[in-house]
Image 1: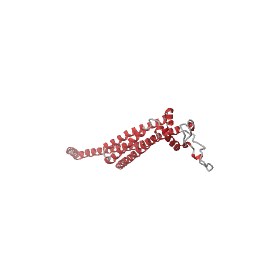
Image 2: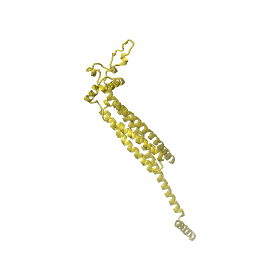
Image 3: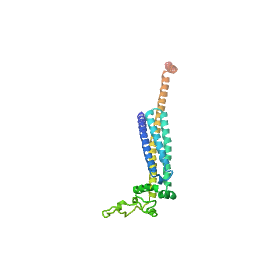
Image 4: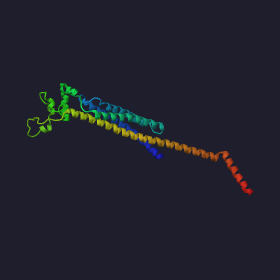
Amino acid sequence: MARALGCLRYLLIAGTVVLGISGVVTSAFAGFFLYQLNEYKQLTPENVYGPSIVLLVLGIFTCVIGWLSWHFFDFTQKGQAILFVTSLVIISLFEMSAGIWALVRHEQIDFLPTAHLKTIFMDKENQPLWEHIQAKFLCCGMDGPIDYRGKNSVPWSCCDISSSLNPNNDKFTCTSMYGRGCHHVMINRTKSILLHVFLLSLGKLLLEIFLIICTTCYMKAFVDRIERRRQDALTRRISSQVVYHPDNNKKLLDQQSSAFRTDSIE
């Protein structure tokens, strides 16, 4: 029993280190997801930043709790284990809420408002943005090359270079353009980021549930050990009273004397 209790204690101490590292990793990935969502904010749906922000803040808190637990908790007292598991439960509830929030937004996103999308597309200041998106994600226009029919020409970023560059094409003429629009590409990209946010929160939640279970088992074993020591101490005290108490010894001698006299008369 003592060996199992010691193993659980060292497991919890190691768990505080893993918890701190997981907080750093969570904050780093959440910050990266925020950067991805903000990189093309003109074409990013609204109300998708919240889950990543929550995970970023919770990652910082988790890192702080792991650091404090490593420096100040040796888990030799029941109160330390209770405080540790309470902190984990609170963080886990918020992370579960962030994961559910990200999953709900993932299912709700379908399309950007058409009027908003057209305004961004027609604004000349956003043309470098569109060209960068078209070249990077291999798409063209909002819904396809047909969106450029009201303009003088289709930009080279819409050209499918893999089809246009061939040994027989000396003048580099665009013979094929990307057929898919950038609207669907950006929506799918946002949904993919939200799915990764959900998976990040799920992974960290599973780690915290494991630590909560380990801490609960440690607390139970710790309480059982204290109760067993208390029972052993009470048993030893009763035994010492029976053996050494003067009244008990006197009664025992009287009983022995009576038995001896009875035997003598007979």
